[in-house]
Amino acid sequence: MTRRPVARRPVTGHPVTRYLLRAASLAAALGLWQLLTSLDVNLWLRFSQFPTVTDVAHAFVDRLSGADYWTDLTDSLTRIVTGFLLAAVLGVATGVLVARSRLAEDTLGPVLEVIRPIPAIALVPVAILLFPSNEQGIVFITCTAAYFPVLVSTRHAVRALTPVWEEAVRTMGGGRWRILGSVVLPGALPGIFGGLSVGIGVSWICVISAEMISGQYGVGYRTWQDYTIVNYPGVFVGMVTIGVLGWLTSTAVELLGRRLTHWLPRTSYVPGARPARRERERGAPVPVPTGSRTKEDAPHDQLV
Amino acid sequence: MTSSSDVRSLSQATSQPTTQATTQATSRTTSRTGAGLALHGVTLGRPGAPVLDAVDLDVAPGEILTVVGPSGCGKSTLLRTLAGLLPALDGEVSQDGRPLTGPAADRALIFQEDALLPWRTLRANVELPLAIKGLPRAERREQAESWLTRVGLTEQSRQLPHRVSGGQRQRAQLARALAGRPRAVLMDEPFGALDAQTRAGMQDLLVEVLRGTGATVVFVTHDVDEALFLGDRVALLGSGRLTAVRDVPRPRDRTAHDDPARVALRRDVLSSLGS
Image (tube, rainbow over all chains, first blue to last red; front, side, top):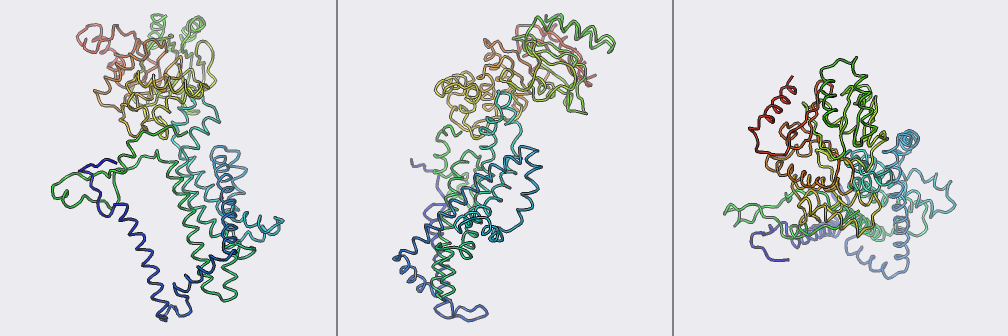
């Protein structure tokens, strides 16, 4: 990146500052936890039974050395990735179908609307009856959980597409599949990713709950086991694991979404950004961050 | 053919529906011999809400026909019908003597609003009709670049639409429409949202780019001067009808304001639109 004298990034917007800020926020939360538990604070909320951060850290280190932890981790990840990918494909497919075809809307719509309000975790009995193995049941529940947010947001995004895009492709001689591939799917992508982001979060909730009820191995199963044998630090190790895994997977979805929808026009407004004091006094215009400028000036290659 | 259809349309403007049977009969015979676009006794609009009635119009191959009329008179509806996006409620719409069955690559439509796909670069947008035709990647890339060069967008070919100006977007739309080598180009107030200077430049560019393509053009506008500058003929719409089709003197000259024939035509067009 070349140095540009005018383009001073404000302190709060600098990437290093922002990462430090994020790390500090996490550290502060951990510090508060440690403080409340080590002092056995017993106000209305009771922290005396609560494991301290150091207890949990010790338990964590113990766990990491055992084979079970990694089996739990890979089991849970396999379940959620399978369920979520299935839900993404099915949700986008039925969302497009319902939005584009009146027949599909009339035939599938009522069934979907009746099933939609049922919490996925309430489908555990259904899963047990339907599927020969627990594993498949858990994937089914995870999939159902993510399916509806993806379906609904896809449906909305497809219906909200600008009509001239489709008309333009039709007057170029494009048929149904060309419109689907060149207009509907890319145009609905920002909305679809909204649904996927919600979906991955809901999937985690459901995969953990399903594991607690009927799993063998898995982070949820282990967490519940630890609770029943009164191993509270173990419970917290499970919770931290869920938190970190959930955060990683939703970040992955988020990053993929941002990559695929990089064409979306962005405002030049940077939230919270103000010109550095020296420039404000000189009455200079609001600087444009160099990083984003060089990136946006770079030619975009063909996407679809 | 131009003069005969002119007379026909003028007679239709003054005549009552009883004489339309004969005018339709004559236009049928011309469409059989000719090519281009033709509307015969066409009613168009949405079902239950017709906008234009009893339209008889022949557009000769390679001709630029401009269509003027007050807003809401059915200019866009006429264009959408010609594009095949909106079926005619009654009558026959044909291209080269064959009735239209729907939108086709033969008739490109250029929209007033931005109809470029925002996730495709300008070049990828221009490549789209070529991809639909099944051209191999290298060839369509090359053709798209050459079209973008012809409309003066060599530098911007790999930019996304929202990164370029409104005028540049309309030029890209023009390149995209022509890249598919349509036999007819339908333009719906394509320069309506542009400022006067850009607009004049775009008109010159359009004439320049169309030269040699042999495409039939139907150009809708609400700007009488634009219609008279671009059109070989001008069709006037008003009160639910095609009221007249007038020949425009040539050669094109933006500065010949004192040419008596032009002045008279302009006054004529304005007064018939005002009535």
